Image (cartoon, rainbow, N blue to C red; front, top):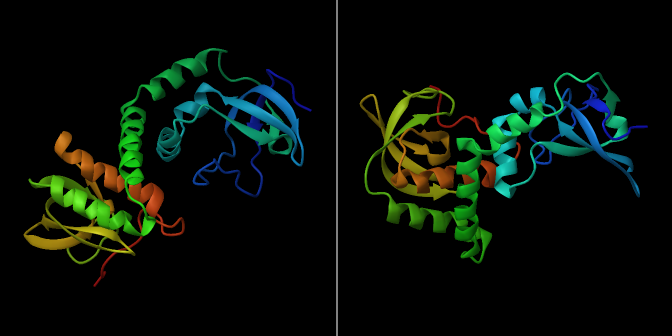
Amino acid sequence: MFSVNDHVRIKNGPKPILTDDEKTDMRGWQGVVTEVVVAAGYGEVVTVRFDSHTLRAIPRTYLVSCAQYESEFWRSEFRSSELEKVPPRDKPDDWKRIKNILITSETWIQTVASWKRINAFLLEIKLEAEFLDAWLMFLNAEFDNPVRAMYVGRAFDHIYFGAQVTITEILDFDFSWGIFVQVEFDGHTMDIPLYMLEIQEEGPHTIPLRDYALWHIDEYIPEFMGRFRGFGSSD
């Protein structure tokens, strides 16, 4: 049905066609066929290398997910039934330029480095049930100065999405929300889950905080919870 060098689009059907991390709907993505094989139980499996238009619009969450495993964000496999032929919309080598921009981007480089540190850290812990304990001990050992951050959870009490806060202390954890930190905001002192804060400072002193937040969001939180689940009271 499809041949190498065919230009295709992932069909815009009623059901989502998800990326490997199951977080991103790929319907409408376009590219060129680079391989066609017949797989037992799947029929025709088509490898599609995405075009420059698709790569320019690729979601950051997908790029981060691919960086975790250093996998190829610029191509993916599909069943032939998920694809349809379309006219080309860029020059043959345009995709290479966008791929190189993304693979040398701060997002890709920092995420690859973060996951190497995270995986090395987690390998030293015998049981998954001890992960939060280990993170808490590590952050307490590394944290020694206040750090500026932005709150990215839902509004409650005196705080709102985008509020600029200062992290002043690492507190404790619970198994629903992970590690809590104390923050100062607009004259108030509040306890906030660390993963709901985006660090606004650069430097080695922020690396442990960033690594924990990345791990918590991508690995710890159940899929149904989502990044912006509400926290606290809205009264």
